[in-house]
Image (cartoon, rainbow, N blue to C red; front, side, top):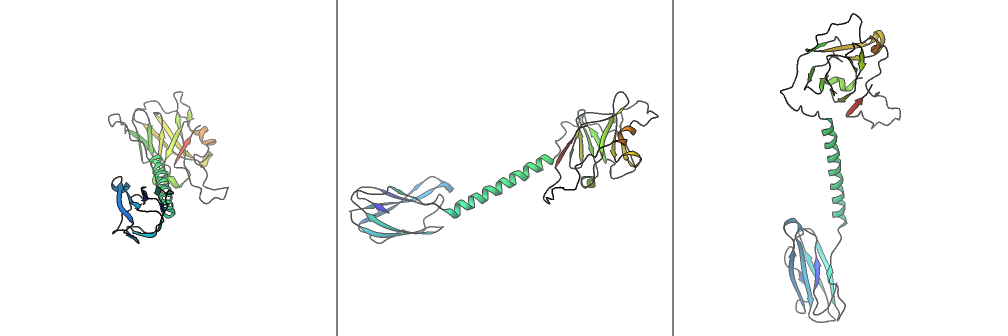
Length: 261
């Protein structure tokens, strides 16, 4: 470290680093060494102010801190000097990058978790619970069906998340069955509308399995013809197949799926 008479040279340590004990200098008669600080708390920076009394001096300085030890050679020249000396800390930079990547991963996992959560129902006053559920296949038979006056929530058995999902069809005002847009989050079907009659259908033709849902407000006559028959004949699967053609073992089923007719 090069210093000059009548000039101040500053040795700057790492932010948060604390000097332990008094710095030791080889020539304490012709060199002046004094402490200084900048900042507060964890961001405080410890500094050492160094001033030679004459040019042509050569000595060394030993500084101990709560993190490491510094060994410096001090030289004084008539005019040349270095006003400030600081250090780079590769290990600290690597630790910061690791911490940053960990935070990024945590934020991503938190976002995925939040995306999988069902949005809370706005008010309990409009919560409608009077639904009738019919169906023998427990794997596609809903546990609960409710609506809040705007959306219908169909809760399926927990095992459904690991099986092929049934598609959802409803009976329209004309008495004909039709497919409807909905989202699947975990074991919950979310439909952005209210319907009086609907059915969850898995499979096609005579081998199709079905669970029917009827809202308590439904007072229409049930047709002798099965309104869901045509839908069952060509019903598409509601899920993405569990097989992975690309062979990527890390591929996962989406947290949320959207289905459109």
